[in-house]
Length: 345
Image (cartoon, rainbow, N blue to C red):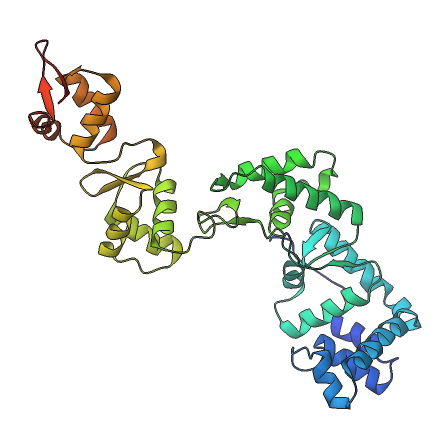
Protein backbone atom coordinates (compact mmCIF):
# COMPACT_ATOMS: atom_id res chain seq x y z
CA UNK A 1 0.00 0.00 0.00
CA UNK A 2 2.00 2.92 -1.27
CA UNK A 3 0.20 6.14 -0.24
CA UNK A 4 1.86 8.11 2.53
CA UNK A 5 -0.59 9.55 5.06
CA UNK A 6 0.31 13.09 6.18
CA UNK A 7 -2.17 14.62 8.60
CA UNK A 8 -2.01 18.09 10.09
CA UNK A 9 -3.55 17.03 13.42
CA UNK A 10 -2.70 14.66 16.26
CA UNK A 11 -5.59 12.23 16.88
CA UNK A 12 -4.98 12.00 20.63
CA UNK A 13 -5.20 15.78 21.01
CA UNK A 14 -8.44 15.98 18.98
CA UNK A 15 -9.97 13.14 21.05
CA UNK A 16 -8.87 14.84 24.29
CA UNK A 17 -10.63 18.09 23.30
CA UNK A 18 -13.79 16.18 22.32
CA UNK A 19 -13.84 14.20 25.57
CA UNK A 20 -13.24 17.29 27.71
CA UNK A 21 -16.88 18.38 27.41
CA UNK A 22 -18.17 15.16 29.05
CA UNK A 23 -18.77 14.39 32.73
CA UNK A 24 -16.02 12.45 34.48
CA UNK A 25 -18.04 9.24 34.25
CA UNK A 26 -18.94 9.88 30.61
CA UNK A 27 -15.24 10.37 29.83
CA UNK A 28 -14.31 7.19 31.67
CA UNK A 29 -16.94 5.10 29.85
CA UNK A 30 -15.81 6.35 26.42
CA UNK A 31 -12.09 5.95 27.24
CA UNK A 32 -12.73 2.39 28.49
CA UNK A 33 -15.03 1.39 25.61
CA UNK A 34 -12.73 2.66 22.85
CA UNK A 35 -9.33 1.94 24.42
CA UNK A 36 -8.29 5.60 24.59
CA UNK A 37 -6.19 5.25 27.74
CA UNK A 38 -2.51 4.40 28.14
CA UNK A 39 -3.27 0.79 27.14
CA UNK A 40 -5.07 -0.28 23.96
CA UNK A 41 -7.47 -2.61 25.77
CA UNK A 42 -11.17 -1.98 25.11
CA UNK A 43 -13.54 -2.97 27.93
CA UNK A 44 -16.91 -4.64 27.41
CA UNK A 45 -20.17 -3.11 28.59
CA UNK A 46 -20.28 -5.76 31.33
CA UNK A 47 -16.76 -4.95 32.59
CA UNK A 48 -17.53 -1.21 32.80
CA UNK A 49 -20.89 -1.97 34.44
CA UNK A 50 -19.19 -3.97 37.19
CA UNK A 51 -16.79 -1.10 37.83
CA UNK A 52 -19.70 1.29 38.50
CA UNK A 53 -22.15 -1.34 39.80
CA UNK A 54 -24.62 -0.56 37.00
CA UNK A 55 -26.18 -2.70 34.26
CA UNK A 56 -24.60 -3.11 30.84
CA UNK A 57 -27.70 -1.42 29.39
CA UNK A 58 -27.07 1.64 31.58
CA UNK A 59 -23.45 1.72 30.33
CA UNK A 60 -24.75 1.61 26.74
CA UNK A 61 -27.06 4.56 27.51
CA UNK A 62 -24.16 6.57 28.95
CA UNK A 63 -22.03 5.72 25.90
CA UNK A 64 -24.74 6.75 23.40
CA UNK A 65 -25.57 9.91 25.36
CA UNK A 66 -21.88 10.85 25.47
CA UNK A 67 -21.48 10.39 21.70
CA UNK A 68 -24.59 12.54 21.04
CA UNK A 69 -23.33 15.23 23.45
CA UNK A 70 -19.96 15.37 21.67
CA UNK A 71 -21.59 15.66 18.22
CA UNK A 72 -23.67 18.64 19.40
CA UNK A 73 -20.73 20.46 21.00
CA UNK A 74 -18.58 23.39 19.89
CA UNK A 75 -15.54 21.07 20.27
CA UNK A 76 -17.01 18.83 17.57
CA UNK A 77 -17.51 21.81 15.23
CA UNK A 78 -13.95 22.94 15.91
CA UNK A 79 -12.71 19.44 14.96
CA UNK A 80 -14.29 19.69 11.50
CA UNK A 81 -10.94 20.17 9.67
CA UNK A 82 -9.70 16.89 11.18
CA UNK A 83 -12.82 15.05 9.95
CA UNK A 84 -12.36 16.61 6.49
CA UNK A 85 -8.79 15.25 6.36
CA UNK A 86 -9.96 11.79 7.43
CA UNK A 87 -12.60 11.85 4.69
CA UNK A 88 -9.93 12.73 2.12
CA UNK A 89 -7.80 9.79 3.28
CA UNK A 90 -10.72 7.36 2.85
CA UNK A 91 -11.41 8.73 -0.64
CA UNK A 92 -7.71 8.53 -1.55
CA UNK A 93 -7.66 4.88 -0.47
CA UNK A 94 -10.66 4.07 -2.67
CA UNK A 95 -13.74 5.34 -0.85
CA UNK A 96 -14.42 1.91 0.69
CA UNK A 97 -11.67 0.48 2.90
CA UNK A 98 -11.48 -2.44 5.30
CA UNK A 99 -11.22 -1.23 8.89
CA UNK A 100 -7.95 -3.05 9.51
CA UNK A 101 -6.38 -1.64 6.35
CA UNK A 102 -7.56 1.89 7.10
CA UNK A 103 -6.27 1.89 10.69
CA UNK A 104 -2.93 0.43 9.56
CA UNK A 105 -2.59 3.33 7.14
CA UNK A 106 -3.01 5.80 9.96
CA UNK A 107 -0.62 4.13 12.40
CA UNK A 108 0.90 0.79 13.43
CA UNK A 109 0.48 1.69 17.13
CA UNK A 110 -2.64 0.10 18.66
CA UNK A 111 -3.44 3.02 21.02
CA UNK A 112 -3.11 5.56 18.20
CA UNK A 113 -5.31 3.34 16.00
CA UNK A 114 -7.96 3.37 18.75
CA UNK A 115 -7.99 7.19 18.69
CA UNK A 116 -8.43 7.25 14.93
CA UNK A 117 -11.18 4.63 15.27
CA UNK A 118 -12.99 6.83 17.80
CA UNK A 119 -12.81 9.81 15.42
CA UNK A 120 -14.36 7.65 12.70
CA UNK A 121 -17.13 6.56 15.09
CA UNK A 122 -17.89 10.11 16.23
CA UNK A 123 -17.65 11.69 12.74
CA UNK A 124 -21.15 11.76 11.27
CA UNK A 125 -19.97 11.41 7.65
CA UNK A 126 -18.21 8.11 8.26
CA UNK A 127 -20.24 4.95 7.81
CA UNK A 128 -19.11 1.59 9.17
CA UNK A 129 -20.42 -1.64 7.62
CA UNK A 130 -20.24 -4.57 10.00
CA UNK A 131 -18.43 -7.76 9.07
CA UNK A 132 -20.60 -10.49 7.57
CA UNK A 133 -20.14 -13.71 5.57
CA UNK A 134 -19.18 -11.76 2.46
CA UNK A 135 -17.12 -8.81 3.64
CA UNK A 136 -14.83 -7.61 6.44
CA UNK A 137 -15.54 -4.61 8.70
CA UNK A 138 -15.28 -1.60 6.39
CA UNK A 139 -15.66 2.18 6.30
CA UNK A 140 -16.93 4.52 3.58
CA UNK A 141 -18.21 8.06 3.06
CA UNK A 142 -20.35 7.37 -0.02
CA UNK A 143 -23.08 4.71 0.21
CA UNK A 144 -23.62 4.58 -3.55
CA UNK A 145 -19.93 3.96 -4.25
CA UNK A 146 -19.72 1.33 -1.51
CA UNK A 147 -22.78 -0.45 -2.91
CA UNK A 148 -21.27 -0.52 -6.44
CA UNK A 149 -17.97 -1.95 -5.24
CA UNK A 150 -19.63 -4.62 -3.12
CA UNK A 151 -21.93 -5.53 -6.02
CA UNK A 152 -18.92 -5.87 -8.34
CA UNK A 153 -17.14 -8.11 -5.80
CA UNK A 154 -20.22 -10.34 -5.62
CA UNK A 155 -20.34 -10.67 -9.42
CA UNK A 156 -16.62 -11.37 -9.58
CA UNK A 157 -16.99 -14.17 -7.01
CA UNK A 158 -20.00 -15.65 -8.81
CA UNK A 159 -17.96 -15.99 -12.03
CA UNK A 160 -15.13 -17.94 -10.36
CA UNK A 161 -15.33 -21.73 -10.56
CA UNK A 162 -14.59 -23.65 -7.36
CA UNK A 163 -10.89 -24.42 -7.78
CA UNK A 164 -10.03 -21.79 -10.39
CA UNK A 165 -6.90 -19.70 -9.91
CA UNK A 166 -6.51 -16.33 -11.61
CA UNK A 167 -3.33 -14.25 -11.86
CA UNK A 168 -3.64 -10.87 -10.20
CA UNK A 169 -3.54 -8.83 -13.41
CA UNK A 170 -6.42 -10.82 -14.93
CA UNK A 171 -8.54 -10.54 -11.79
CA UNK A 172 -8.03 -6.76 -11.73
CA UNK A 173 -9.11 -6.61 -15.42
CA UNK A 174 -12.17 -8.75 -14.63
CA UNK A 175 -13.04 -6.44 -11.74
CA UNK A 176 -12.72 -3.34 -13.96
CA UNK A 177 -15.19 -4.94 -16.38
CA UNK A 178 -17.74 -4.90 -13.54
CA UNK A 179 -17.22 -1.21 -12.64
CA UNK A 180 -16.94 0.52 -16.02
CA UNK A 181 -18.89 3.61 -14.88
CA UNK A 182 -16.72 4.30 -11.81
CA UNK A 183 -14.70 7.51 -11.53
CA UNK A 184 -11.37 7.06 -13.30
CA UNK A 185 -9.43 8.18 -10.20
CA UNK A 186 -10.34 4.88 -8.50
CA UNK A 187 -9.22 2.71 -11.41
CA UNK A 188 -5.70 2.00 -10.24
CA UNK A 189 -4.13 -1.25 -9.14
CA UNK A 190 -3.55 -0.32 -5.48
CA UNK A 191 -7.16 0.75 -4.96
CA UNK A 192 -8.57 -2.35 -6.67
CA UNK A 193 -6.34 -4.71 -4.66
CA UNK A 194 -7.57 -2.93 -1.53
CA UNK A 195 -11.17 -3.49 -2.61
CA UNK A 196 -10.50 -7.15 -3.37
CA UNK A 197 -9.06 -7.59 0.13
CA UNK A 198 -12.42 -6.53 1.64
CA UNK A 199 -14.02 -9.76 0.40
CA UNK A 200 -14.15 -12.80 2.65
CA UNK A 201 -15.04 -14.99 -0.32
CA UNK A 202 -12.21 -14.07 -2.71
CA UNK A 203 -8.67 -14.71 -1.53
CA UNK A 204 -5.04 -14.75 -2.60
CA UNK A 205 -2.61 -17.63 -2.04
CA UNK A 206 1.08 -17.13 -1.09
CA UNK A 207 2.04 -17.36 -4.77
CA UNK A 208 -0.04 -14.28 -5.60
CA UNK A 209 -2.86 -16.15 -7.41
CA UNK A 210 -6.51 -15.35 -6.65
CA UNK A 211 -9.58 -17.56 -6.40
CA UNK A 212 -12.40 -18.58 -4.10
CA UNK A 213 -11.16 -18.28 -0.51
CA UNK A 214 -12.75 -21.68 0.28
CA UNK A 215 -10.63 -23.45 -2.35
CA UNK A 216 -7.61 -25.49 -1.21
CA UNK A 217 -5.75 -23.74 -4.05
CA UNK A 218 -6.14 -20.47 -2.15
CA UNK A 219 -6.45 -21.60 1.44
CA UNK A 220 -3.78 -24.33 1.19
CA UNK A 221 -3.71 -26.44 4.35
CA UNK A 222 -1.37 -29.36 3.82
CA UNK A 223 1.63 -30.70 1.96
CA UNK A 224 -0.49 -31.94 -0.97
CA UNK A 225 -2.11 -28.52 -1.49
CA UNK A 226 1.29 -26.81 -1.29
CA UNK A 227 2.73 -29.31 -3.78
CA UNK A 228 -0.16 -28.73 -6.18
CA UNK A 229 0.42 -24.97 -6.17
CA UNK A 230 4.19 -25.37 -6.57
CA UNK A 231 3.89 -27.72 -9.57
CA UNK A 232 1.19 -25.55 -11.11
CA UNK A 233 3.39 -22.46 -10.79
CA UNK A 234 6.34 -24.37 -12.27
CA UNK A 235 4.19 -25.17 -15.29
CA UNK A 236 5.90 -28.42 -16.33
CA UNK A 237 6.93 -31.75 -14.72
CA UNK A 238 9.24 -31.26 -11.76
CA UNK A 239 11.24 -33.62 -9.52
CA UNK A 240 9.81 -34.28 -6.06
CA UNK A 241 13.04 -33.01 -4.44
CA UNK A 242 12.52 -29.67 -6.18
CA UNK A 243 8.87 -29.67 -5.06
CA UNK A 244 9.97 -30.07 -1.42
CA UNK A 245 12.51 -27.26 -1.82
CA UNK A 246 9.92 -24.94 -3.38
CA UNK A 247 7.36 -25.63 -0.62
CA UNK A 248 9.93 -24.55 1.98
CA UNK A 249 10.72 -21.43 -0.07
CA UNK A 250 7.19 -20.25 -0.92
CA UNK A 251 5.22 -21.34 2.13
CA UNK A 252 7.88 -21.17 4.84
CA UNK A 253 6.98 -24.77 5.79
CA UNK A 254 9.51 -27.49 6.52
CA UNK A 255 9.00 -30.00 3.71
CA UNK A 256 10.90 -33.28 4.07
CA UNK A 257 11.74 -34.86 0.72
CA UNK A 258 10.46 -38.33 1.65
CA UNK A 259 7.21 -36.97 3.11
CA UNK A 260 6.62 -34.81 0.04
CA UNK A 261 7.19 -37.83 -2.25
CA UNK A 262 4.73 -39.94 -0.25
CA UNK A 263 2.05 -37.25 -0.49
CA UNK A 264 2.53 -36.95 -4.25
CA UNK A 265 2.15 -40.73 -4.68
CA UNK A 266 -1.14 -40.79 -2.74
CA UNK A 267 -2.90 -37.90 -4.46
CA UNK A 268 -4.67 -38.40 -7.83
CA UNK A 269 -3.99 -34.75 -8.72
CA UNK A 270 -0.39 -35.77 -9.47
CA UNK A 271 0.96 -38.08 -12.17
CA UNK A 272 4.42 -39.67 -12.11
CA UNK A 273 5.74 -39.00 -15.61
CA UNK A 274 9.41 -39.93 -15.23
CA UNK A 275 11.99 -40.95 -12.67
CA UNK A 276 10.89 -38.83 -9.71
CA UNK A 277 9.18 -36.35 -12.06
CA UNK A 278 5.61 -35.31 -11.30
CA UNK A 279 3.05 -33.47 -13.42
CA UNK A 280 -0.54 -32.43 -12.73
CA UNK A 281 -3.30 -34.77 -13.89
CA UNK A 282 -5.25 -31.67 -15.05
CA UNK A 283 -2.58 -31.11 -17.70
CA UNK A 284 -3.92 -34.23 -19.43
CA UNK A 285 -1.17 -36.73 -18.59
CA UNK A 286 -2.34 -40.35 -18.44
CA UNK A 287 -2.04 -42.11 -15.14
CA UNK A 288 -0.13 -45.37 -14.60
CA UNK A 289 3.25 -46.84 -15.42
CA UNK A 290 4.64 -47.00 -19.00
CA UNK A 291 2.83 -50.28 -19.70
CA UNK A 292 -0.50 -48.71 -18.69
CA UNK A 293 0.14 -45.67 -20.87
CA UNK A 294 0.84 -47.91 -23.91
CA UNK A 295 -2.36 -49.86 -23.23
CA UNK A 296 -4.43 -46.65 -23.03
CA UNK A 297 -2.90 -45.29 -26.23
CA UNK A 298 -3.65 -48.52 -28.14
CA UNK A 299 -7.16 -48.63 -26.69
CA UNK A 300 -7.77 -45.16 -28.02
CA UNK A 301 -5.87 -45.28 -31.33
CA UNK A 302 -6.03 -48.95 -32.33
CA UNK A 303 -2.95 -50.83 -33.73
CA UNK A 304 0.14 -48.60 -34.13
CA UNK A 305 3.70 -48.95 -35.37
CA UNK A 306 6.56 -49.10 -32.88
CA UNK A 307 7.67 -45.57 -33.90
CA UNK A 308 4.18 -44.12 -33.39
CA UNK A 309 3.86 -45.74 -29.95
CA UNK A 310 7.25 -44.36 -28.88
CA UNK A 311 6.30 -40.88 -30.14
CA UNK A 312 2.99 -40.86 -28.25
CA UNK A 313 4.37 -42.33 -25.01
CA UNK A 314 7.15 -39.71 -24.96
CA UNK A 315 4.48 -37.02 -24.87
CA UNK A 316 3.15 -38.61 -21.70
CA UNK A 317 6.32 -39.80 -19.98
CA UNK A 318 9.88 -38.58 -19.50
CA UNK A 319 11.52 -41.98 -20.09
CA UNK A 320 14.15 -43.46 -22.38
CA UNK A 321 12.97 -44.85 -25.67
CA UNK A 322 14.39 -48.23 -24.71
CA UNK A 323 12.09 -48.38 -21.65
CA UNK A 324 9.08 -48.15 -23.96
CA UNK A 325 10.47 -50.83 -26.32
CA UNK A 326 11.14 -53.22 -23.43
CA UNK A 327 7.53 -52.82 -22.27
CA UNK A 328 6.26 -53.49 -25.81
CA UNK A 329 8.01 -56.87 -25.77
CA UNK A 330 5.80 -58.05 -22.90
CA UNK A 331 3.65 -60.61 -24.72
CA UNK A 332 1.31 -60.79 -21.74
CA UNK A 333 -0.03 -57.36 -22.69
CA UNK A 334 0.94 -56.62 -26.31
CA UNK A 335 1.15 -58.49 -29.59
CA UNK A 336 2.63 -57.58 -32.96
CA UNK A 337 0.51 -58.13 -36.05
CA UNK A 338 1.61 -59.09 -39.54
CA UNK A 339 1.91 -55.45 -40.57
CA UNK A 340 4.42 -54.84 -37.70
CA UNK A 341 1.83 -52.85 -35.80
CA UNK A 342 1.22 -53.47 -32.11
CA UNK A 343 -2.08 -53.93 -30.35
CA UNK A 344 -3.32 -54.89 -26.87
CA UNK A 345 -3.65 -58.58 -26.06
